[in-house]
Amino acid sequence: MLVRIASTRPPKVNGVKKAVEKMLHHFHLQNTPVRFETFQVESGVADTPKSLEELMLGAQQRARAAFQKGELEVAISVGVEGGLFQIGEKVFLQSWCCVFDGEEFSYGSSGSIEIPHALADAVMKNGSDLGHVIDEFAQKGDVRSHQGTFGVLTDDFVTREDSFESAAIFALTPYFNKAMYRREL
Image (cartoon, rainbow, N blue to C red):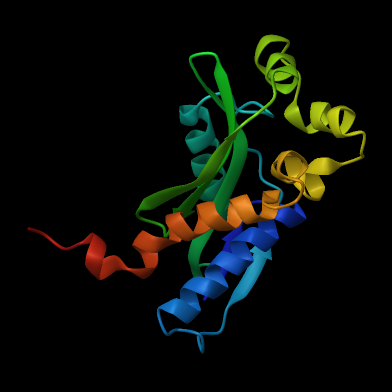
């Protein structure tokens, strides 16, 4: 089984790999040989998406682009996207995943966490990229390649990798449990 991941960032890649491995084990397919390929793929959306629609579109466009890169043996491609959405005055961080098997897309998301007003204002009002703002906010470098904003806000109780693993599990579920998803009443 070839899984193409539309990212080279460690939290995204490792989260997807863990999700695939857990799904294979859960569905008693742990003896299935798996090969992962990673690609730097543009999302076609803002560096920090600011709506659920933009998050889903970015993940979908990454998944489609990764599927089309190269060999015909692709089983699935996986696009992941992190960003923000707003409900009323509150702004939340969430990770999204899209799985593409060449015919169908399936989606999943992580839980979401409310972000502090300082971060929300910098991104939503001033147009800054969360990846840059969180470095200054946390007084650390390259946070997005490590624990991510999730990790900073939860004191590493939930990391960026964890959020992408969760999103990928939910996006992979229709692929691994096709019989349930094709069931009719």
